[in-house]
Image (tube, one colour):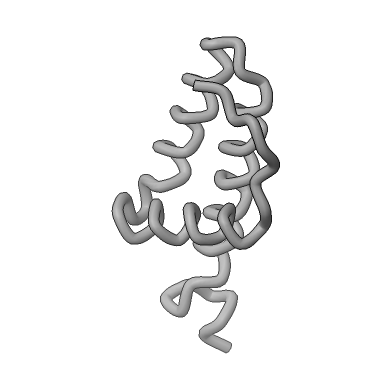
Length: 72
C-alpha cells in the first residue's frame, strides 16, 4: 500500500494515541513493525509516516501521567 498524499501532524498524533490505547507499553514495537512492513514493501513514504507515528508514541509515553515527566 502506498500513501499518495501527505499526512498531517494531527493524523500522526491521533494514530499514535490509538496505538497507545490499543497496545499500551507495546505500542512502539507495533509501530516499528508497521514501519518495517512498509520498508520491506519498498514504500519509503509509508515507512516514513510510521516512523513519525513511532516518534509520537515515544513522546506520549514519556509524558504519560504515570511517568516521571508529569508527576512532579
